[in-house]
Image (cartoon, rainbow, N blue to C red; front, top):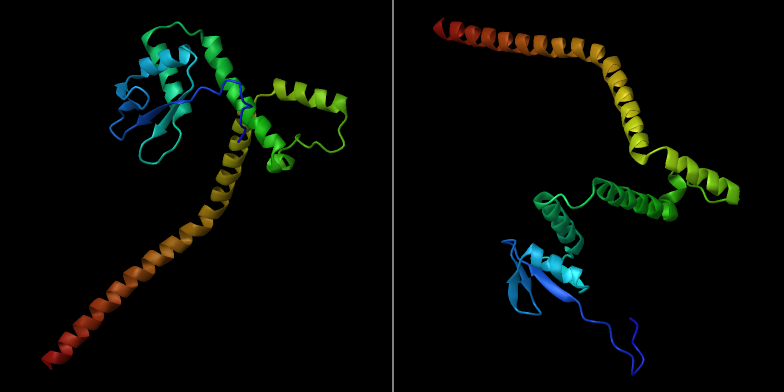
Length: 190
């Protein structure tokens, strides 16, 4: 943790908002309950707000701010659709970048960093922009679904005779039990 040199203004403390199990939000600084819109106003006033689940102590700041955006969008159409799309796209790109740069990056096709020069990196970036991650995922899922369907079709004909055989064995076992019971009853009468 960094400490500020003397004479320099310390960072403003975060305004901690506790979220209780009944979904109420409690401002610990002002010792009062607040609404989502009041939290939005705090953020607009450049306050550093952090929302914490009172029980689990999980940080719910991102989720709560997203909920505020949702509520504001629901109440008025003042956020342009393109802005919302860009937010989603940016979030997806950030996740993809983190994956590429992380330890599993070498497992992602086209994410290899070894032996590439600047031109290759520029080409890879341009290719990544052309094909959407969502389209690639849909294609891969469709391929997997097709492979699974083919495997099921290949296995089903082999299973049906077994199922019929199992039903026949069960029926014969019940018939044998009935006959044994009749034989025991007939033996008792003699």
